[in-house]
Image (cartoon, rainbow, N blue to C red; front, side):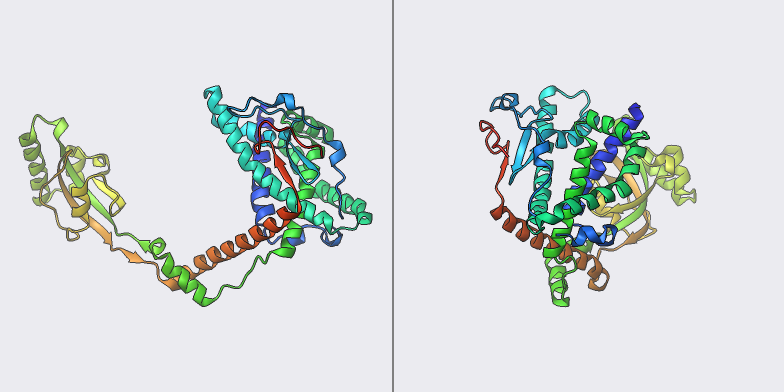
Length: 385
């Protein structure tokens, strides 16, 4: 059962967080996944507020430190729609348990509140979109609308949830979900809100905006550094460490002898495995692709990108010891040409334009819908929905 709960926790996190982020805020193009009658049905009120309890202001923490929340506590009200702490705690608590097990209580509560605030923003955005959809739906169509959503939930979500929870009935699933502070009814509601939020967003946001050639070229020049590819090289290394030998003189003589062996025809890899004290000695001194500027040793970095390929270096010295290197292969610094970058550029510009449209639409909706959260004023009780 513990394994089942863990799997369901993963599902909760993946479904709720990913759906709120990707589906509701920047939905995919899977409009065909939803039944036509859901997409076309048009309402102005919710069927859910009466099912949700109000908050008890005594459960709030003092004004200093993180807010300690109970599952039934209202943490936000969007229009007349309350959002309960349990809706978020069912996602946040398993993450806290997994990532911060054994951490001090004050750290756990601080991180819990941080995650709650981040997730609450996403939930509020979804709720705003959902309520705006309802404004456009004739009240007479609400019953049919929600029946269609429930049917779609049963067809596309219920079996997966039961499988992940390792249960065989909806009742058993509800019991498991309640152990996380949510319920099957609440999951149905969240699913419906997410679907409707997606649909209304599609009506106000063009998810395939036009990207002109000039816009793409301008973006390429403005973000030129993003398309710079630094030089990199593969190289061989022999080393004598100062802290492994009696003095610098012995270190120098030891490395010089290694170099002489290579000059006499012994493979450098063989010498490295036998005598080198470098970190790659067991690999024959071979260092795989190394980006220019990535090494701690400036001496080695400069030599790797200046030495002719295949030539054994002179003895080099840095803070750690003496070195001999040989470059096996090197690629010079370059820049990805526009023709190769334009697909990525168009994706970036599309994402930017979609986000700008989404933000503008949500800002407009916020002007029509009052929003209160417990984090606005910790001394204030929640308004009655």
